[in-house]
Image (cartoon, rainbow, N blue to C red):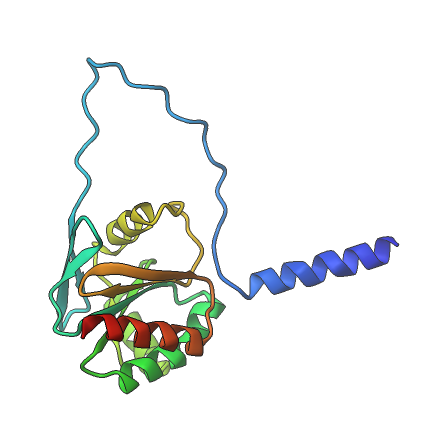
Length: 194
């Protein structure tokens, strides 16, 4: 009986390990309420510069999503890390979607770890990435603001992808998602553009 339970638990742990990467942190108890005399919380950042040393994309928070300075009507944001196996596994699928929907879809990879430009360039080249990848100082603030906008925890699981149509939130995905599912949603999003 204990052996069956152990095998079932191990199988479940392995299965969950392949759906997404994330770290769980001990949550602190809620902060005490501030009195009226205490200083107000600092303003949340609303404009972000996503860059890779060659190109910069701005993202300005709006009431319904983000205003991106790109020409493509559909934007797919992918929050990822180089150490995350599901994140690496999705790269060929995102590259395929970027190629297939060129001019209509802008895939933007947003690195949520610290890497040198040289290390990121080696990673991009080694994995055949043909889409924009941001390794900018604003990445973490952008990720935190986006997670908050979607009522996700600050330490969300990755890969974490969000689809926008003309800057308006359309759909999001947590963990590894089949390419066919994302493509179906891209087609639906493009239908809203017309």
